[in-house]
Image (tube, rainbow, N blue to C red; front, side):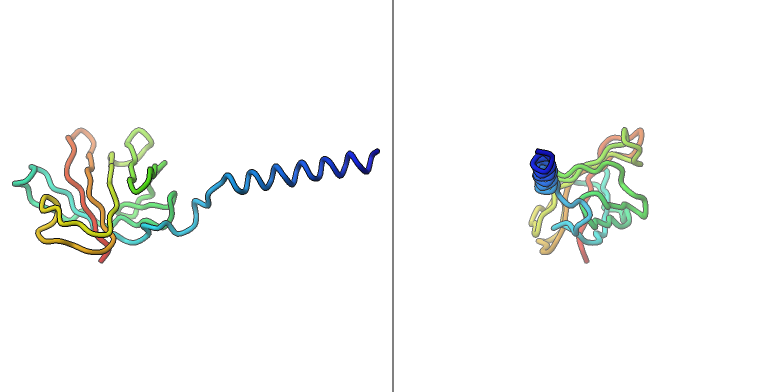
Length: 135
């Protein structure tokens, strides 16, 4: 009886571990959108000017840095990344990753490769346009 109970407990623990392993995603693995993105922000809508903003480095879904500062609690939903000041970040952001774009609001000409388009909000300011591309 003791051997059977030990065997059942062992099988239960192995099954629970397998379920846990299957249910978790590896947040440290390279992300499909991984890369170093040269970024820029633009205030003033269509008549605004793009200004270099530094690098966004995306290594995994949890290892993301903007200008050398780790992003706290980044959230991915499909190909959209966001983060908030409420989590201790320097600003709010919501960006959509793409492999090409011909949106003349963000780019002078059509661009190819890993890129993103979206918005960034500095503390105490409104939202500004935000773009980035892997060089």
